[in-house]
Image (cartoon, rainbow, N blue to C red):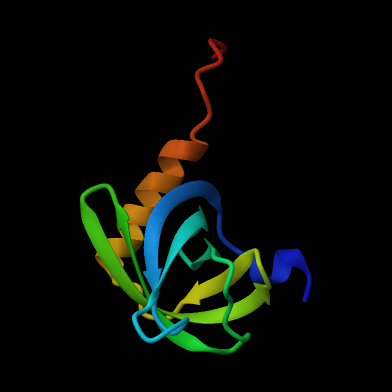
Length: 111
């Protein structure tokens, strides 16, 4: 699979503390560092195997988002790429707003 095949939506760098269930009995703290409406990259030293389904909780603005995710790939000591499986429409709109705010072109002064 090429990068273009699994990255069909815009991604932005977005940092948010997160909780990823399944790394130990209490859940494990992690950090979202890359975000799209389809998934995210999670910075964490411990990783889960590709194909693992678990829950991810993180905040955008004042909203807590809890979503079931599937691990798509893992890089030991670095983190994991995850795909959102059940993102609510409201949470999807919020993520789209964040992405849009970070990817809007700056005014160029030309008409």
